[in-house]
Image (cartoon, rainbow over all chains, first blue to last red; front, side, top):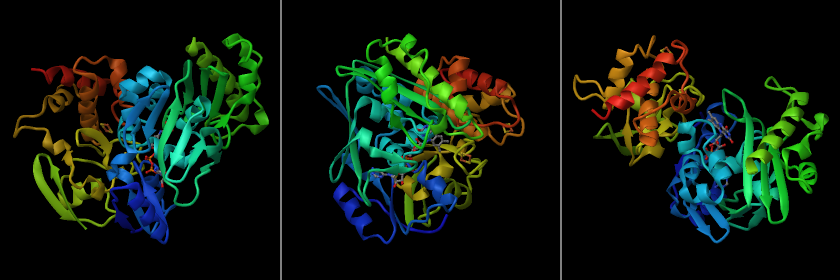
Length: 264
Length: 155
Ligand SMILES: Cc1cc2nc3c(=O)[nH]c(=O)nc-3n(C[C@H](O)[C@H](O)[C@H](O)COP(=O)(O)OP(=O)(O)OC[C@H]3O[C@@H](n4cnc5c(N)ncnc54)[C@H](O)[C@@H]3O)c2cc1C
Ligand code: FES
Ligand code: FES
């Protein structure tokens, strides 16, 4: 790891100033992605701005039908939160299945979505649940946030403050996980909402996306049987050492059917 | 940069570079070499320590991030010559062969007890150990050790 200057601001405003004035600054949240990347010298920021001491980035608040999760909330905190378990149990379960316990103690929702790994879990939840990402500058719909492999709608130096999740009628996330890393080979998040079925997948392509065709197939019949003939487009699927494109396409249907069944 | 923290119940401090990893600070400056580096890529769990009561991979945390924190390493568990019940259970159950993964296994075992209590089924232990890799034992006796160590912690 190359050397850098370390900063530990106490407010979002101070963090924004620090990153704006750094030659090549990087925010660090849990460090579970950034530090390995820096060790590999794939990133070599001049300044690292640690968000860990900023109280306004933490915490989980339920206000009516909206569950707000601060950017610095760890996966372990989301998994163990009584509020999240009650309002959106599928989200608590998703957080509790990211990586391993030590990774969950440090890794955060803000870091996970800012990083937008093609196989990350949270992005599928934000899209399917119709969440809103709040930054220090604006609000961005979950659906518009994830732009491509490791790319998001965030502008340079923009800081995620929190994510607002509307409470669904029912929701479930099913992932076929890589047994070593626990990242999703394919994951499908299904939500039943007042406006109908919403679906998103992760792990299958460049990053998580809304699954409009799954939603159409579920529009009149919200049941696993309605997906019996569903075909994900093989030519758009990732193929790697872990799974072929054909296998991933197959997994999209199977995970979607299981998620729909789990919504019952 | 100077950091002050608590390690195994005692005040500790040291000069670190911003890039110094917590595990390197513990091993090289404090000479607490019980915490191991197996992979250095956040996968194996040999480096697990407790920071403010929570398990973390100390190869994936900067020492400076632990400033002001309360850190417990494998060296902080025994009471003089008397092993912690979790350590004793690993000894009694042949829970290690080469021993390289063991410090991380013991710390993760304690973290499992913190979150799931002392009456653990094997499936829970196996699931919760998914960030700890052992190249020797085949895990059977590690699972047995953690279950027995957890029970013994109430005695
Ligand atoms: C062994 C292992 C297994 C894992 N398994 C999984 C898995 O199964 N599923 C999964 O989804 N993930 C997995 N992860 C990734 C994990 O969830 C990370 O915690 C996450 O991707 C990054 O979160 P972080 O808080 O550690 O972010 P960091 O590493 O600190 O930061 C990541 C990026 O986000 C930026 N960033 C952080 N916070 C903000 C913010 N508030 N605003 C703007 N930008 C910000 C940083 O600048 C950096 O570019 C795994 C990681 C490891 C090490
Ligand atoms: S050395 Fe830290 S996880 Fe392997
Ligand atoms: S006992 Fe050798 S790695 Fe676990």
